[in-house]
Amino acid sequence: MLGLLFTDKECRELDYMLRKELDEMLLDLRDQRIDETMRAAIASRYKIIFRMYARLASPKELSRYALKKGYPSRGQA
Image (spheres, rainbow, N blue to C red):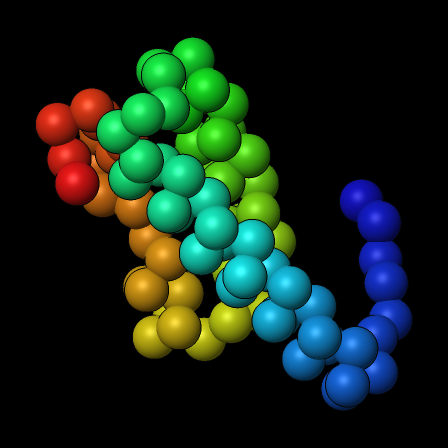
């Protein structure tokens, strides 16, 4: 376990960076041109970033980024 101390401004910046990264990965997961191997790699990374974001975000904000069961699959848009 690693502990870090951030100022309020640094926390807001980290929150912003994590949200932007999650948004980008969601777009990639919805892109039908990306093959299944790459989608699986993105989904794996998404889970890690999501858990980091969960430490900072409220449940309401977090629900925006929660993936549905079985996501991503090629049939979803």
